[in-house]
Length: 336
Ligand code: TRP
Image 1 (cartoon, rainbow, N blue to C red):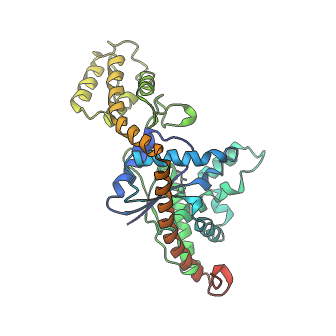
Image 2 (cartoon, rainbow, N blue to C red; image 1 turned 135 degrees about the horizontal axis):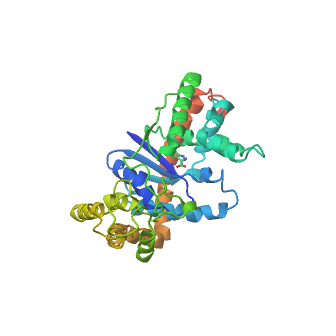
Image 3 (cartoon, rainbow, N blue to C red; image 1 turned 120 degrees about the vertical axis):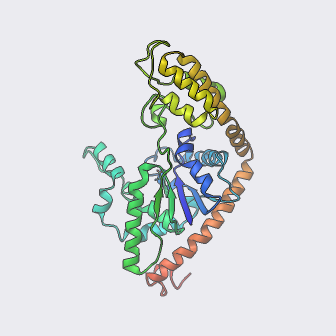
């Protein structure tokens, strides 16, 4: 199977990214041909004010990927904007997508609602899912491991692939979203999702002291005002994390039992959690730091990935151009 996925480079990644998608990426690369890329054009739709920072974010993000087990020897790791075919296929798909269909996409609708008619969103935001469809179709992606917020975009991508077939007879696979079993990790504040804006994340790059501080401040069962009050374990962020991070099952079961009976303090539960999270993160931190310390090595990884991606992309685009009638001088046909 062909696996394709992208991530927007907007800063360091957190453990929610790991459980949400990165461990799936790392697992898939063992059995399948994988293309993973930094979606830098997609950042431009809402970060126009800081494009100068995107390069640094790409490096950090790719270091995070590698720290999580994504292997440049197995997967093709590259940067979207370095492969011009993405924008070319984007334009072709754009000719098959009615504006109304794009306006119905939830992310676009939300942004339009947020602006309350004062102004309309950027044209590129309307095209955001078109570019995403091009990202996948270009590599003949069949499986797309993403977070659940991306399901609507993948649905649109399938519709566009079908339209491309009907309009021009181009045969590309209809991509399917692949969600993990822990698609959404609760924030340290108990909110449904980790988000940089809410400052409720544990970052892959956090040092041990930072992890301890964040865990100490975690939201638990609010009805449990004292250690001798019985508490709820289900859905309690501290135990959600224990289940994910703490490999010592006996310790976790013992803590849960005592928590339910009001025989353990939050301090002990959290101290053991911080220890487990740090044990989990320690090798990742080390790997991440190694990757970032070797700037040239990282550059080489990306250059090689870009080269391999371009090869695949060129091939697909040549097929599409040909189908469009580009054996004359139109659509890049005769003159290339
Ligand atoms: N929109 C995705 C996100 O915000 C990023 C993305 C861009 C992507 N192109 C993609 C994901 C192609 C999967 C496939 O997470």
